[in-house]
Image 1 (spheres, helix red, strand yellow):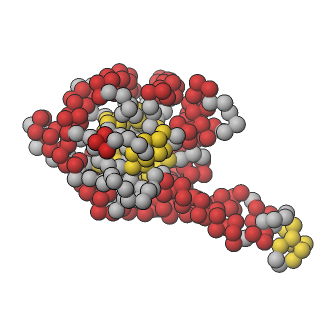
Image 2 (cartoon, rainbow, N blue to C red; image 1 turned 180 degrees about the vertical axis):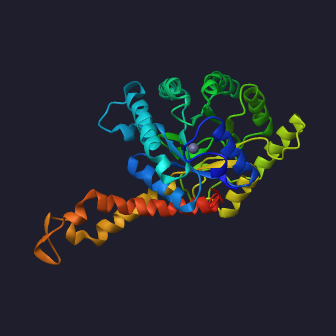
Image 3 (tube, protein in one colour; image 1 turned 90 degrees about the horizontal axis):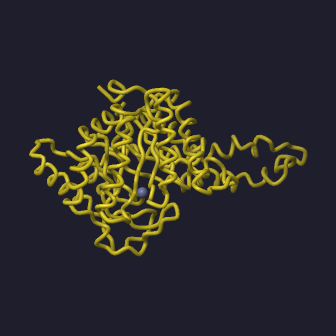
Length: 358
Ligand SMILES: [Zn+2]
């Protein structure tokens, strides 16, 4: 039995999202979440999922969503980020089934100052729910980790009540992911904030589970966005087991891993660290930095290797009257980036052991 025996191909929502994560938790694998900024990068990720026979998570960041709508648009009041998220979601919904894999459609970090973006997406989810019985997105992330724990939990709870009504999953963050991503710089945050405590996880679990079981927690365990030389913060995925044990004790349950955990800032991690995190209940791992670089590689190498065919529309090393259209057509050189990105995605599916789980 595989995942396609329990949920259909295409964008999944509501109980099906729970089923996918529960299956992953039970079988000790995690699903990679790739940041997508265009139909091209979304297709590269879905193509890789199809070939790896794995479910996949596609996510838009606030900046990535604005890019999806077009950098020429104003993002005043988050207008472009809202429009781009909705456009990306509709695009993915229209093609996901054709790739034959379950797709979880998600939005990435949303800090307090970006809540108008969240509000715009949630309004679109409710509108879509009115028409189809399911939300536009499968899931969203709220990242109020810069606020106090109390405020973080209470804002999440308010949104979670609305999301539970339409079957939308919530990912929240507690503790801080170091490094820099999408304009948020946590490079100088104090070390202690980079490790979440088990009591924090329990406080969140208790508040959220009264509303719905459909939530996950991005806990900090020394993870850092981006790729850096080894520094003074060490990844401690073993800490995640303490969270699970603490919540299990409180619940008096025999479920080994009661909490769904999410791994941010995992680019550049060692394979054994990744897998320790997965064994301790990580069901989603974000992959962005490495796929960004991979997307460039194919395009970069094509441009460097075919330079003689790319400087003029006519005339190349084979003759001065030879046309170059089949080299400068974007379907040729952008495709090279899709291929190298897909290849990197494939590595993520293998690392997280989600390959072959359909
Ligand atoms: Zn992140």
